[in-house]
Image 1 (cartoon, helix red, strand yellow):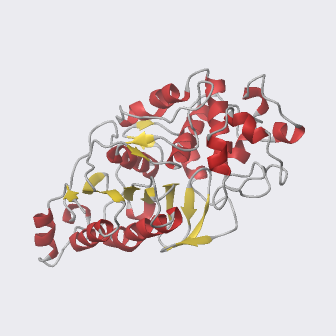
Image 2 (spheres, helix red, strand yellow):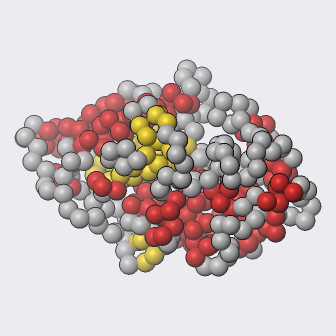
Length: 362
């Protein structure tokens, strides 16, 4: 395993051996995310150097781990890369794309591009699309909360792989049977979120990548983004965006700051608050992470400490802990995964964040 840490290893070892007297916690910081990250030592932001060393060691022991970044109080405190990648690498972070789309929906609602989450999707789909009455009743809120009602098995079944090779990705979803009416049950469905992106593109009369650049990424100083292209001039709004790790960290910091970058509101704070709170009564456990449920295209834990996170296939995470003013990013190499399952890999990666990084922020 090839290890490269931007925070010097020797400096961390010295800090770890000197009793570790980190500074007291400070109020949350609202930084200007259009600027480059400012670095800090662990002690400057009240973090345990030995805890970060443990995180880097545990990450390095997972063969497919590729990056682990940590920001606290608005400063970059740790940046580790493994397996030959570096700060310029673009990571295809799969379903983290959904949380990006959630931000874009928030800006569209603020600007009147979309009328509200109760709006139905039918007016924004192509005239060639065939909808039945149940399709026509699906709302933006249903797509945001994974309650569109379609019969779908993506987490344990083949539906994503069948959908991604379809000729018409929206119609493929519309042709699926309805297991329930919309707004009833949670069923994880990337095709539904892709359709939400198609709705936004139609409403904005702008290609989704251009809309994202104008309304989100430019404000974050993000100049390199790759989207997976699909049919009919669309990109995959449910999965497949590629970003650098530092830019993923900025997405988490933006949400930690309530949608603000410095004095500029990028995503409405009310939207950030809404999408990162629990929208369901059920809770699951994912590896070391307890009390996991769903918001609106963000996963949420109301355990202690409370957190919310974007989660992509095979262990891609943008993880935010508001009470500790902390953001962590992890990426992996998920392609050609045979020696383990994507669920097990994600659980082990999440274990590094929950077991090492979060406790290091005291």
